[in-house]
Image (cartoon, helix red, strand yellow):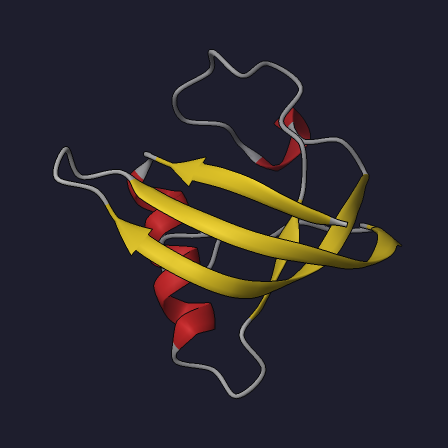
Length: 87
């Protein structure tokens, strides 16, 4: 399944740029339990998510980033760590 995503938070942008500079250009998409929480910690995410391949990245004039991603597989997270400003 191919889905459009809009990234506005700095932590999400950092994770995307790290993936962009990696060999495979893949992200783990993990839903946040409360979308209004500005600075979530590891416990604020659900344990199941999606591995997605980034197909397209567009920077908008207002600073947001639009990403087109293709879901590849489902995964279960056992531990979440904050490294280098992203999870």
